[in-house]
Image (cartoon, rainbow, N blue to C red; front, side, top):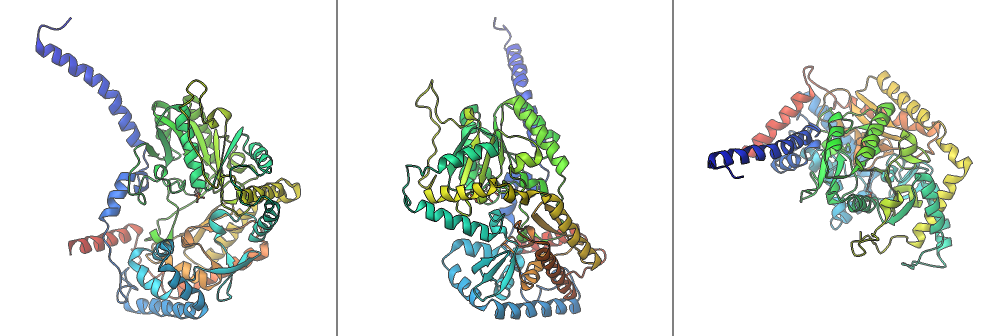
Length: 553
Ligand SMILES: Cc1ncc(COP(=O)(O)O)c(C=O)c1O
């Protein structure tokens, strides 16, 4: 019955409204609390901050003392810088000339060349320490550039190179011979696909496979299928985790449009588990196990190395425990747990991250190394999740195609890769893998400590990152000293060193020797001078002040 007093019905409506609003508010609050407290955990905020940061740069007069170093230290740095510059000028002459020419029309190259170091220093570094974007050959664990310089390859080809470049050359050469009779005929399959599928199902412990052209596409498809089958909208990714450059997995800086169906939550967090336990709109959780090396941190590029706060450290047991907890809540809530093993699959163990951490996912994406060096992405999943149509609603399908999916040359190269992997003699490469790489990291760290150098390494097996033990604005300079010692790095510099597993102890000893030599030269050139009271916080405050001054102009 309606209340005869309008005020009472108003009060009743207000109470009912509050009853509805309170759980919503609580859920909203719970979600906010499950975000990582850094900017990495706050996509919207990070985009806003990115828009506020003004451009400014150091010219030759303030480049060497941007940390307030006295004149004699700045002069020492300047001498070191120009000594390196003349060495680079001579040693990389051909490669640099071609790089300059190519970068006029290759936008990707313009980007990577500009973002090797913090932007304030970028122009002068580009002018004087330009490197070559070209190599002409590879052999063993080395690459040779256009000028004939041989360097130890620490780039790992973005993670593709697990077993050494020669291994992939062999896979591709054999694959080419086997696919030639068919050629690049697309649509119908090369029969080898059947073996590939069976082996991938055995490796992943899952029922079905779909093939794509890249890791990004594999992740897109896994998420799309999870949404289709759960009827829920949102994906959960963890702060800092890379899953390719597709919009839904890149809600922060780098993507001009914010996705609305992505939650970026803190990894290794009870609060995140609580969100998963309570929300009803979550279709899937995406895990990139590489994050175990730096949970909730971005891919550690030297372009963001403005101080020494970058840190890493891998705790296998703690990360395994986290994955077990995730597994449990996903099972309870019918959330699809997706391991994105595009990077770490086949590197940590023959059975990938699932085997390494002892936790099974509902879907797994692979890529990079899987096709023996050719481009690929793959999704493995449980049967009921992989299906792209429904019996009871025949028009409600989940679409995914791609011109080059299942390309015959890619399929034969994948067969070459998986056949080698199956061979017990080859597989022994995984025996004692962690002990070997942890031992090598300890060895290099001990050498650095012995030489009193403010540099250390942490590692997830053969994936390493460099961090710095004392506050400094100039740590990014180390990449140029390392290159001068004949160590080839990818464009993220010291943020990620990726070793292939064919590094022998002797190869590694040589790399370690050169690494220490590079750091010693950098130290001798004064880059790590600091006022005793300098802290990372003070550095950041100084940078903020520089930005405010620039904005105020
Ligand atoms: C974990 C992960 N997922 C997805 C991708 C994207 O793969 P691709 O570059 O082949 O598109 C990458 C690439 O680095 C990755 O590391």
